[in-house]
Image 1 (tube, helix red, strand yellow):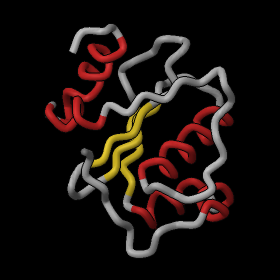
Image 2: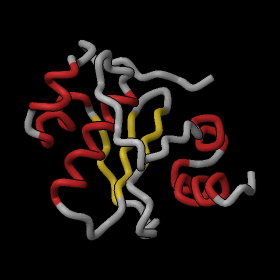
Image 3: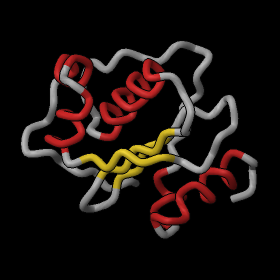
Image 4: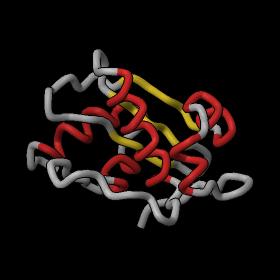
Length: 119
């Protein structure tokens, strides 16, 4: 069971989808990070600890992909009601337990092991 970080006020789906991304990140105290994973099919991940939410996105992606995935992952991390589903081509894997066992600096490697079937 993962740990949930609660913002001062749980954001609405409209706020997550419509607020300027930097404002959303700042107000919810989200750390927006660059992942070292650069595989074409990888779109990012979020992990939650007792005191923070980190959203890590691959480098060199379009502004649209970066914005959409950041919003979706932030909404998921804060368990926002009414968050629209991603298109079927995306697969979401909850790896909270695996990342929580790893040091935050090892999150990319934990994700690689989970995705490669090595846990």
